[in-house]
Image (cartoon, rainbow, N blue to C red):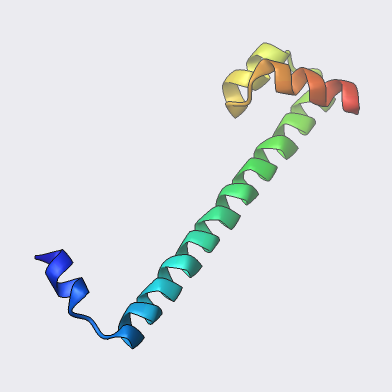
Length: 74
């Protein structure tokens, strides 16, 4: 039924719905990027406080290898 309703919409309405979907997806992508950036900031703070990499990985959800790379880049 949803498909039938969508197929019967006029082009202007479909275009507006498409724009809204793209805008929503872009917002979600930016939020995801911000969350990742925040996690890396948290990793940097924990590294600065000599917290073991194993604990940092568990807390942040970032793999130990990535944390080790980040430590060597500091």
